[in-house]
Length: 375
Image 1 (cartoon, rainbow, N blue to C red):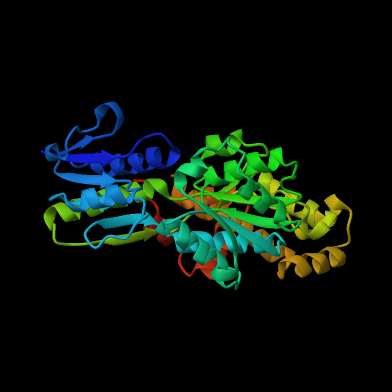
Image 2 (image 1 turned 90 degrees about the vertical axis):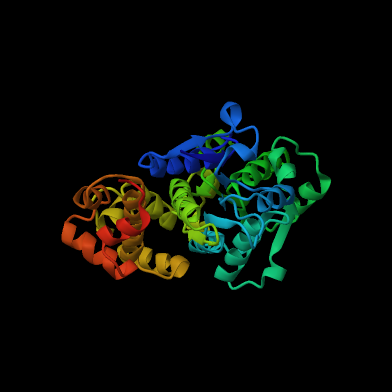
């Protein structure tokens, strides 16, 4: 019997979701015994045969490098020549968040980082690259992770002054939801409005944290269960061949939109109403004419304004929104392809297939096979 250690705190959505993925893989491993953290955590590494860990400090990294057992890190905070890693694709995450802001019509950008961590830096590099901004010129505020965890302490004068210095209508990318929550709390104390003055976007989609915030926080959702599942699969391979070093990067999902990014698009009430109509009715079949009839604007006027802000047609924007929802359902649900097509309002299965292949280059079935951990 192999004793597998899980060095997770189980105190947040990240750890709990990763653990679910590990357990999904391990349920078919009759020779595995999972030893978790908290009350069940192993007292000494000599009692385990392999380890999946969320390594968050240099001291932890150095300690696990000395273990004579297979170790898989699921955080990616620090580079190691000896430890295998299964982690979120942080460059891609930052890039998608940058594109999301740009598509909202935002043109001023800033970022909050966790200092001295690879994952935070990579999110910053992906973010700046997607916006064609030299990363050295990106307006950033950086502090250690423990500083950000103190989310209700609003008294840092440097932080307050930095937030007050941001231009009106700045898109503020926070490298995780903890930093986004601290930003939102401090802005409220400073009487700076979100989202009309500052638009906030976090990462992790920590649902309880995001919903507790005032306003509620939009956040990039990650494939955390898949990270856990893949980490267990990699650990299985390392048990067979301890001399390997394996690195996997798992792409994020999509932005889960809440109040912190709900804004008046470029000051245009008609475009804003159109976007809200599209998002509210994304699961139904509707036309551009349905939108213009609802908001009381001519189709030509709306098309011109829409293209000015988003550089795309209304129809293309609708299809993009439907495809983003379809991607999430393919990865996170067990719905049949026909049901997903209907849920996303494509009208016909053939239209769904054609649109999906045109956008992503593969069929919905193939996309699910490559990205889903549902069995």
